Amino acid sequence: MSDRKQFRDLADPDVAREAIASLDLAPDSETVPLAEARGRVLAERIDADLDVPGFDRASVDGYAVRGRDTFGADEADPIEFDLVGTVHAGTEPEIEVGAGEAAEISTGAVMPAGADAVVMVERTEELTDADAETPSAVAVRNAVAPGDNVMLAGTDVAAGARALGPGTRLTPREIGLLSALGLDEVPVRGTPTIGIVSTGDELVRPGEELHSERGEIYDVNSYTIAAGVEEAGGQAKLYPHAGDDYAEMERLLLEAADECDLVLSSGSTSASAVDVIYRVVEERGELLLHGVAVKPGKPMLIGELGDSAYVGLPGYPVSALTIFRTFVAPAIREAAALPEPQTATVRGRMARRERYAEGRLRLMPAGLVTDADGETLVYPVDKGSGATTSLVEADGVVAVDPDTEYLGEGEEVEVQLFSPDVRAPTLLAVGEDDPALSRLLDRLDNPRFLPVGSREGLRRLSNTIPDVAVVAGPVDRDVETVDLGGWTREWGLVVPAGNPERVDGLGDLVDRDLAFVNRGRDAGIRASLDAAIEDLATERDTSRRELTDAIRGYGVGTKGFESPARAVARGSADVGLGLRATADALGLDFVPLGTEPVRVRANPDRVERAGVEELAAELETASDVFASLSGYDHDAA
Image (cartoon, rainbow, N blue to C red; front, side):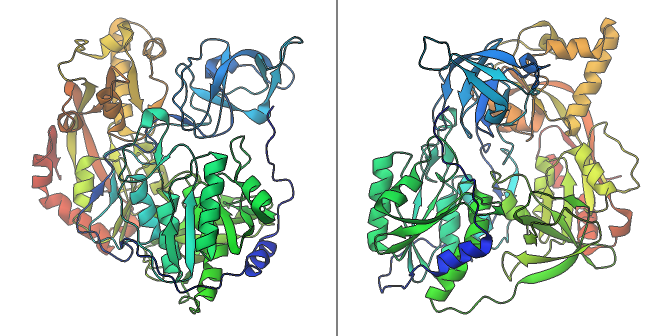
């Protein structure tokens, strides 16, 4: 195994604050002009025109395998796999994983062909032959299922999804999401001068060409943190992308240290084989602290470079922004002689029970919603540190003490809002993502929609957190609701233009070796597909399981309604599950399999909320929305 920097002695958060307070952030008089975006208001809806990530990627360090090959593996009886290569983040895999084979893989790297799961490195042991210098095999002590420890393409942001609506005021959270989509607008202002250096070979600046097949992603943190610097009263200076090269990283950090009062970097601070930035600080300055007992954001660096202070932020956007706001922004405000911002906190009751027992301070992203009595409810918004959408789906954070095992439903908590301008949404909707829904939400005042799928949407509605759930297909649950109306949409198989494989129905997926991209189990359209497969099984006098086992790709589903079609469009799949409207929009062909209803179902206790009434009124009069989409029909009854 390679030598890696570990976080064994994590500093207490108060120690981290003291270390930053000991740094000299005295501003100089130099002013650097930067683009303006923060505080602006969007004039139109921003839809995601790409999946984020644009590729299936490993979410942990470990070994990429075929999940079915690990079944039965445990501590007492590990299974050995032949090593076939290594895949690093930011590189295109040149290997394929077959039966009984594994590939070493880094967090964030593109999954190699053939592999559908990752075994964490902690659950493995490399095996080396007596006459060999490098490992030839790996023993796996833990079984994984297909999809385990893998972030599928579009899991974070799904192509075609409604990213931000018109009238949105841009704060650092929104800028982070726009950066992930490749939009090139960054606001900063003021003094002291703060240098910002991004690291990681997989990063591409917004506005530049993105190669998802190589595992590239847009640089979110540089723009998100720059916006936070401005909000704190600093003047941010962006430096060129550093990559993971030691010499280039050293050159840029020292240049920034010579020109700025504080240097911030993001990424290359975790315990990864390619993370070397801490060496630069140790060798060219003084490293005061490495690792803080806080979640998210454990891998934080604090030190000095030349005459400049230095803080290394985590690589994941949510972690980076949370650590910046908690530890760095107060120091910038003090150096800029700015008063502490207006108190931006709100108290509310936990909408559901949340377990936590990790022994370190947790800064839990949280959203707000108002119940039928006008009381504020608080719910966790945590899609993982790597999910950029957590930046805009949350309204603030709840600080959870290290000794807290759980927050009980109904327990009062204090939410530290991301900004005094934050206000709870007038409508909280969850459920099935849909192009018609995006257009309807554009017509409402300050709505929030969480695309969790039909099944999960109904589950959440049963917990009384959201106002409405959007449910598609034959999905049902014993939940008392009020039907506000809806529509129908044509669904089926999306194929390349010209339908080169001459696909004409479900039978082709079963009988032929076609690469198929499915939707996740919570999607209503997936339920429609499963019902159709059940009918085909009855027709063929066989089992549904036998048919689904024959469909290549059936078991792993994507999140977004456009994601399967996008896979077909880029040539990585023969067939995708989708809508006629999506196929037409992307210039693809379509094999219809049926129509399915989409209903908007409201919490009975919330039907008199202004946002719910506004949505119900739009549903009755929005025939133009459905007429503009192929395969859609308005059905408000």
